Length: 209
Image (tube, rainbow, N blue to C red; front, side):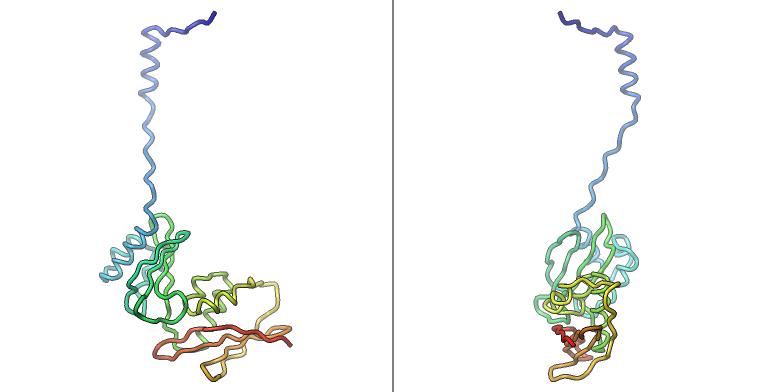
């Protein structure tokens, strides 16, 4: 036979007091969608409002976006894994990024990537090489065409592997070839453009000794 536990009036009052005495747990506010955060920074930049930009981005991100050399991208291209992109549809700019990309962490834009106006072939090649060393594809796309970045990143840079020695840039029929030598061969970044338009790396080739 089952037995039922019946609480008396005093017991019920004590239980109610204990229950009502518990502190309320505040509801956690959901982080805004990355596209919402990126949109706020983008609109603040368009308006030239650094104070509003500082409310949704780190100081480094604000400095970067306000240094963009080209006119504003005209299309929002969505967000992937916390990175939101704005791209050009009517203007050609150097590199494969084609505009601006923002890394969003929580309620802040923590890093901004942008198509860069690089006035020396060696600077474009050096920027791409450094991005490869860090494993940062978005930084690579700032100065490298998509095909060049894809070729370079097929192999991960190994700091304990062969040492690359920069050999400078030499003129070639359609631009410049910037070379790195290493034991067993060499890598060539083929750079196109001009100081006025900006230089970018269009392709990469390799030779073996």
